[in-house]
Image (tube, rainbow, N blue to C red; front, side, top):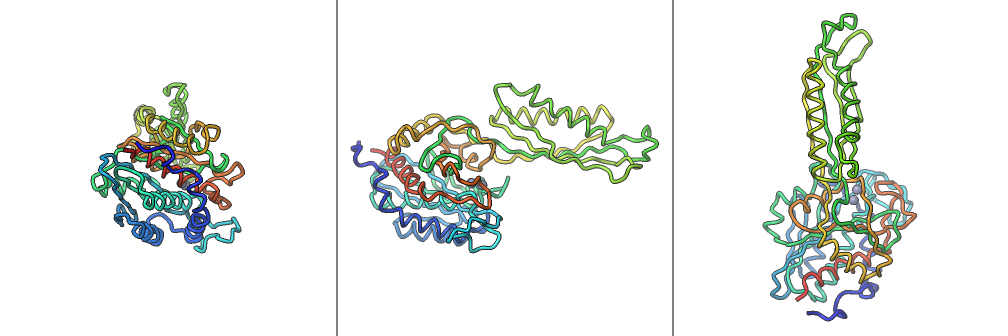
Length: 393
Ligand SMILES: [Zn+2]
Ligand SMILES: [Zn+2]
């Protein structure tokens, strides 16, 4: 058992503030889009190698995994940071603003990467843990349904770098710098999209009895789909079904052959997610059948719900309270955005934490957004102490 004095504290990271701010601003000035993170990955890998990690490059694309074992402990922890930027033209006016036209770190992944590097440097220097540490620098978080986390898993992440638990963080505009927002259970939404094609029978607008009008079917379906959340989902749960587009027909005197509808479906519970799909499929098929039309449904699963396991979340809450004090650690509300960290949590226990980015911070994905450098040392101290406490003798 290590004495409490030996675990990482916030004050241990004060001397690293200038270095971490420099790294963050370097990454900010040189953003790379999803699947293009070659330079960021090289920058990260070279530092990790210099600090003595066993570094594996090109895991699931430009992913980098750094591994270090200290002592004979059998436990293994993973911590993940994302590295990619967005196709946005920066408007912060910062001295270290993006040098790449039309590309910007507008989600703070420059900060997440820097935080994990800060912890990596500290842990390699102090080596006060007993077991195996895995640092996952993930590409392409912003890439939509086919993103970096499933790509790294498909490339053998769990088999090549075995670990017991996984942690990750995202900065949180609207909460004060250096504060933590945690939640066990569902945290962020599953985001699915559905393309429905209703195939009727086209004809002259003056002779509707000789046609099967897909426009009428589509209109009935829109109304019926709105009953799913109101009448089928448990009122203590929450969900969204939005018909974002309907396309059918060109002119007033022709009944078209088909109609196309595009839906966004969001949920915070895997069972609700299944229910939504089942209801959408059933209503679509039965309404179309009632009118003699046929349907094609392309139901595309986006990222799953981010579900934090209770034990690992409470462990992180304890560490956060030790580091910054209980008054700076609160329970996070549900977040309707989605995040591909959820793919790891489908296989491993763990927790996705939110770190305050300032009450006046611009929102994520805004051209005026910037990561709050004041949060860098708090984040790095968190990962360091969490690792030391989890991999304690
Ligand atoms: Zn984002
Ligand atoms: Zn993000």
